[in-house]
Length: 195
Image (cartoon, rainbow, N blue to C red; front, top):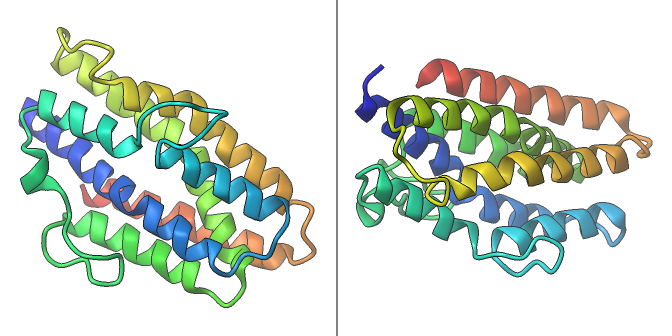
């Protein structure tokens, strides 16, 4: 693998992150008041840099900082369009995973989308640990503050995922939960194969 390929891998994985807030907002429209809604709102607040529990800037700023360190122009990289109209800017692997998550969030049973989000958040540490390992191998001089977004997510997203999964385990419709988690897992497996 070349340095350019590693940089592109980070950028493609970040294209999902770019649409993550839109997925959360879309899901929240249909989630009833209660603990699951509160957990999703807390996740969205952190993404937007408005969290008291996990203070810090909006996550798009962390993505921008790292991509710029890797020599990727953020403005030309940044996917255009809304989640339902992805256009041709995102990589095909990113389009596929975002499209699948959009489909799951659109399911008439909000538990399917919530379970998909929970599964995805639980996978972030694994994904980001892999990317950090590659970055340290190919850019040994890359400062930690450039990778802060990745490093921070390794710690925090495991909590978002596990907290949401605990709440979902208390729901009656475990078929919907299992379906959402399974489809999310398949989508991410396909994503890594495609890039």
